[in-house]
Length: 351
Image 1 (cartoon, one colour):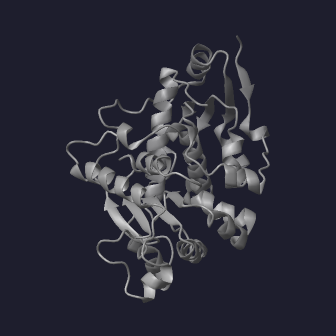
Image 2: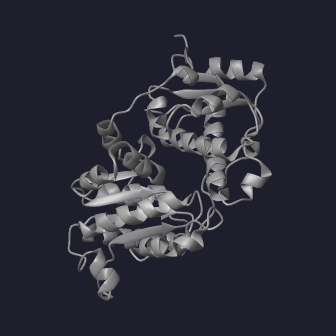
Image 3: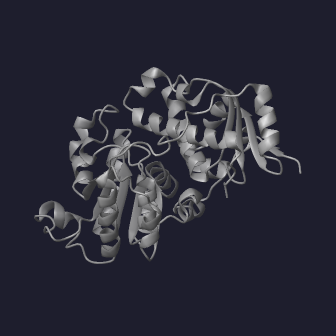
C-alpha cells in the first residue's frame, strides 16, 4: 500500500457554527478516559485528593448550589457545606489536568460542553455573545481546558460569559497553569482588570495538582531532528497505507495566518501523521501563539510528528520561553516532544 501525501498548506477548511458547537467534547486522546484510568503519582498526594474532590463535584452537578452568581457575589456566598458553582484545577503542564477534566465530563450525565479556553472565545466570535450564552446555558456542565487570559478583551468577555452561565445554573470546571487571581499577569495590564479577574476567581473552588510532567517521567530525551534523507526513510518505514501531511515548516507557519484557529481541528481532519521539513525558530510572538494552538490540536488528535531542522525545544525564542506566555510555550514544547517520540517509533493512533 502506498502513502497518501497531503499538504496542510493546500487546505482552507470552512466550519459552520453548528459544527463548532458539536465539536465541544473531549478529543480522541481523552475520548474514553475516566477517574479510574487516571494514575496518581504516589509521591504527589494532591493528585489522589483531586480525584476524590472531582468525584464529589460530579455527583453534585444537577443539584442546587445555593443561588445564582449574583446571590454569591452580593449575598454572602455559599455555605461551607455547599459546593461552589465552579471547580478549578491548578497545576503545571503534564500532571494530568486534562485527563481529570475529561473524566469529569464523562462522569456527568446530560448535555455538556468540553473545550479549550481558545475554543470558547472562538465560539463567541462565530455565534455572537448572546447566541453562545443561549446555547451553553442549556448545558448542565461547561468544561474549560487551559484557562488563560491573554488580553483585556478575553478578560471582559469570559468574566461576562461565566457570570451569565452561572446565573443560568450551569456548573463550570476549568484547568490552568495559573491561579485564578493571577490570570493575565505578565501579559497585559492585569491590574486594570482586577474586578473582572476577581469575578472569575470567586466562582471557583481551587484544587492544586502537584507533580512533574508525566510525558517526561521515566522517558528518554526527545529525539533529535532527522536529516531530510532519514526523514524520507522514516516516512516510508512507518506510515505505509496512511495519510501523511507533509509540509515545509516555513510554508505551514505562513499558511496558519490565513486560517482562523477555530478551524485548526478541521485542518487536521483525516490526517494520520505529520511531517515537517526544516523546522526553524519562530521569531514573532503572534506567529508563535498561532502555532501553540496548532500544537494543541495535534496533541488532541495524537498525531505523530517526524521533522527535520531545529529540535522542538528551540522552536520558540529564549525571550518567549522566559516571557509572559512562557507556560503556553512550555506546554507546546512538551506536547510536540511527546508527538515526536511517537513519530520516531511509528506509533499511529489518530482517529
